[in-house]
Image (cartoon, rainbow, N blue to C red; front, side, top):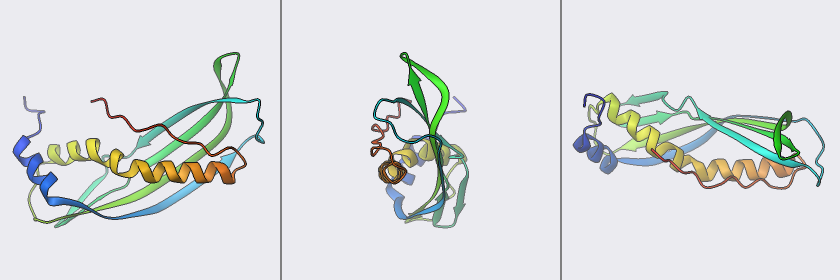
Length: 148
């Protein structure tokens, strides 16, 4: 039971937190092949570095990194051939109404559950816009589902 999050601590954090700002820190993309209407693609998307938590007084900052790689599909199977890649990092700033000493497990749980949901609409819009500018049809990422 030592790994469980203190529910009261988590509730206190949820009541205290609000999104203050979202900044795009880094963005890079590479287009490997020209767009072809006959190509089927498979998406591989990862959110990494999400546990890089910086709590300073009443400010909580998280920097989720996104890695999107789109592969060509041939004969119903995903190949190793990359169509394009997009890498980006956001800085997500939360303000806290109370300065508290939240447990590290509580912060990690909040980040794992809430940060992807909070940043996902912005990531979807960015990917949609960038893929269009790369000459591909606008890619609409699926809804984010946290199954844990």
